[in-house]
Image (tube, rainbow, N blue to C red; front, side, top):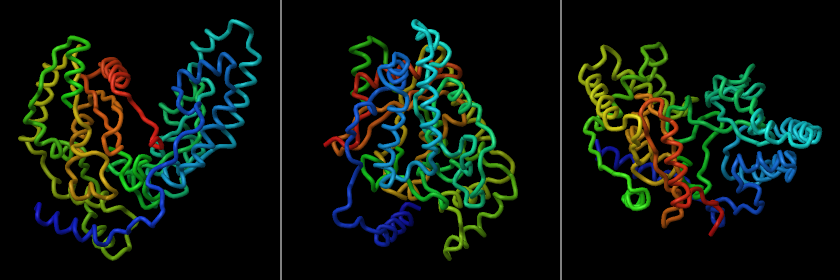
Length: 377
């Protein structure tokens, strides 16, 4: 199998388009300092009238218009509506009596702060297709609950962003909107150490234990077992593959591969895989409990080149297995590699212990530099 993948990779590399001479390799640096403030900092400054919501929203619109032609991240915007909503926020704050800041912070903690919404989440009046060409033109009639909560807290959506087809792949690519690029290196996907361990032990005095979880070897198979649905669509994988090979398919190779995989695993669930999942759950519950976290790489490689994950399809198991187990995860940025690519770690806790993942990620982000401007030299 590895030899076949190697041959396919060489063919893919030979046929892949090369970047044109003089084309940018990453996005330009951030010039507006507002874009480097956190959401809570922006909300506080807006409440205190140190910044207007219109000023903040316009700054984000300007940046999106600057970099989106390079990234293809936002697939549909609502900039005009967002600016109108920001103006209403500024009027509301102006009409508030003195000393009302604390009440506003309690009632509307994100008042006037812009955000983007993944296109797979319903944002009223915006496209809601999950990257399927067959759903082109479908608009969300209501907000998804999580989007509604954010808007209820005062946040202002700027638009919807790209997603893998049906959110079922590690690369943000579909036949409806195209491919999204990594701002740190435009020829790579936007996805996806002992130094961390040493820092935790020295600075916090915590006990760090290296784990070997043999059940993770079956992570991708467990994921496929629980995600595979015996529906009619899953039985059309062979037909979809033929159409893709002659250039007549509206689906990506990744989604077709998923359909074929579901066909291969259709039938009675494997008792062995069910036992492996249960054993992994027991082990993690025993290890993590209510006061432990697991630090795990989100991917075995730094941000891969575009379409390269097709040749190592099972690497998604680094994140997919925790999705199946229903465990909370916080993805934490840890600065940049020597090549200038983003580093990160996923912080995992046992069920309903989200507070632990958030607190640990916040600490690690501060200790290791966190997010870095992709435009910096």
